[in-house]
Length: 309
Image (cartoon, rainbow, N blue to C red; front, top):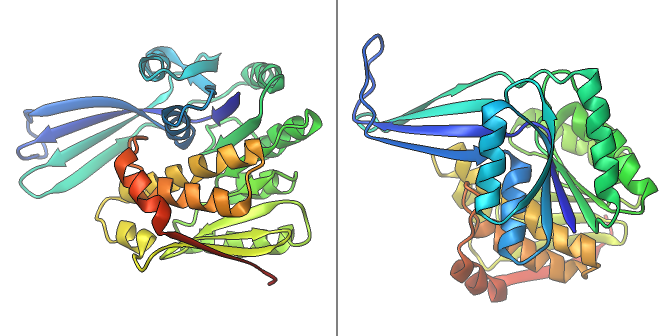
């Protein structure tokens, strides 16, 4: 069983309006609710490919119930630790007249010390029988920045490999505890600086680091450096050219989900890189995958390496 942990999930409320006027009552032409959070998208993608996966983490209130129900409808098992505060919501309003989308993000819920203790106990219970742990996404208020480090250490004690995908202090603390694979968020210049420090810190360790490039992905492993590309198509550059940040989110979610089975089952790096890049390039921001597109991309992926740095 693969366990995908999301500590700060959200319910997304998408509104489509003909036009949005400030200070006025606006009619909504279409409304849609869906759940978000990188770990949830990863869990759905893993389930799509037939893997036994459980979504865990923190969820509370009516939004938390919506998160559980949404995952259950897709066939993903859930084992969330309940919190007293309401899980956050993100409202996104599309103005058809201008083509612009405006977002309103609720603050993350505050997590109490007692809830943190229950999370640790629930997590340790899930390690029994787990083949891999996925830790990804942002942290809610009240959780210590070193929480991913602690969760990684618990998994290491149980002999379960960890895939870590986050940024900032959570990335630094988690990576220092020896996860099998780290996929840093490269969405900003600051994240790029963090990535450079991460590469320096993991040199000579058993931790591998995966970085997205304009044409594919690069893997820094203890054996050397691997590079995977899709023909001549600049896969990531094409995603970056899209106006919505969610297009890039879909690539990142797919990339994380693509590496997890190989880490859990001991695939070779060429096998992992081929699967992960094809999946990332064919994944949508909602945690769905174009299976026909995935199958078509597999023979187009070229893998080279390892090369010593």
